[in-house]
Length: 122
Image (cartoon, rainbow, N blue to C red; front, side, top):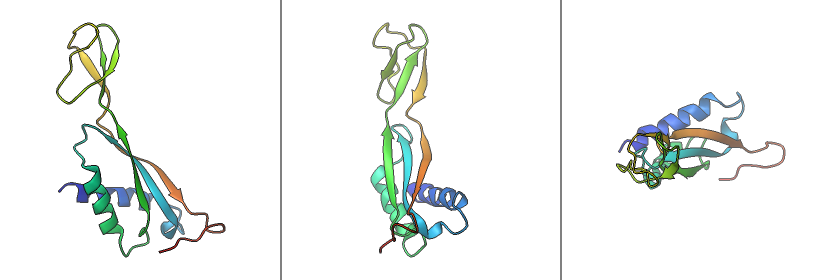
């Protein structure tokens, strides 16, 4: 289950990018997961909850944006959504394609509670 090590990497990224007093103020972490990243979202969510339990990140949610596998044909410049292993351009039938998206695994946003307006519960 490589989702456990991915969840730990996400926690490490969050902690490295927080202000000194912000560790207990994390409300959510937004990530992008590409269709071809090999990550199982439910497993990642479970692992994130498990490794943050009892820590200053406990209760923070993991918001996942799924990114489709999109290719661009180098022959006719058509961009198209595809499935893994299928690189045939639906417009010209060409196979000279480049990946535009679908392999991502990125932390894109860390949302914090405003310590003066909201209180973290839990």
